[in-house]
Length: 290
Image (cartoon, rainbow, N blue to C red):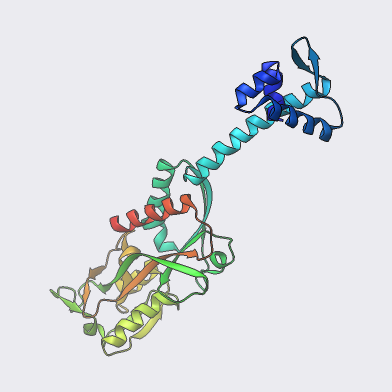
């Protein structure tokens, strides 16, 4: 149809051939094939040139529309392949939201405003089904752990800090080891899962198992119980970025230092997505800043 368009716009087979870089014979053959497919004549001779029949004019108009749509599709595809457009579904957990996800989304919107992002909190019980089954492009998880069909990209090691009541005997200690808390009552701050596992593994390495007297499973609530003097707690650094409440003091831990590793989980078989690469780069920048 583009050959027909060239013939109509130039007014002759010879002119169309010169425009397209074909031989006049090749142009005539393509017009003949198109007429056979359309089952009607598309051109009629006028003097030394040609003009379109009604059917030829109709198809020429459609050729113009198709040409514009092809150009638009090529531009849209180029934008997608360059990461300037696209749609990403991202799953995250709460404490990573403000510190990692929010600045990464802001950076991506500034650099790639055509990329749309769907954000959703993940199920803490099993954060990866959406990634494995293709409903999400990426999920933030605490690991590492082996997950079939999922690739983990390390973003950040988030250390746990000791949260003590004001006036606690260790509140002013120049250096605090994890074993110093072995005999203390503990206030839980995590749901059962990889975050709590990181705490328990560090305690086991220090030679004890913590005695939990309260299970709050929430960082703000845990600080409240600590401030009331009911025990000590471990809260990750990201979990304290929204503020430390009155009545508690925070101390870094040594030997060993409990740490949770935060990863971006992506599907191993997912096709390349420039927008996803850009978002992961923004996540890494946010992790470095954190």
